[in-house]
Length: 95
Image (tube, rainbow, N blue to C red; front, side, top):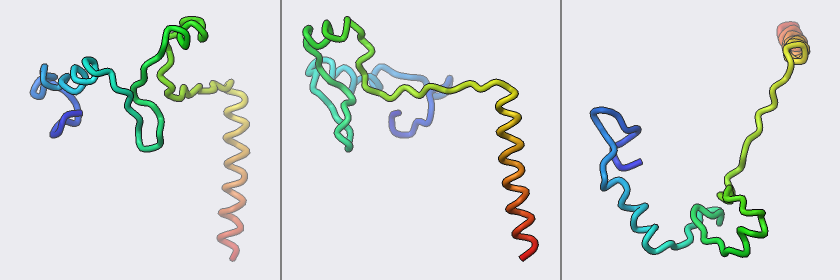
């Protein structure tokens, strides 16, 4: 986000100059890495793209997969955790 912006809004709309960094990168296409050495932008050769069956989702960002559990499992887990916490509370109050 540009300096002074937490988000864009009607009173702080996105402006053409906010894209200047992107335009500069687009014209030079330099590879950019973060402090951990992970790519933020990278060039790929045609061979690299074809090797991955032309999958263009090559950004390298981790994809979190959220596991959706059934209500029965969630209720069971809830009561197991509740029992453990209740036991901790009981042991703490008896000391």
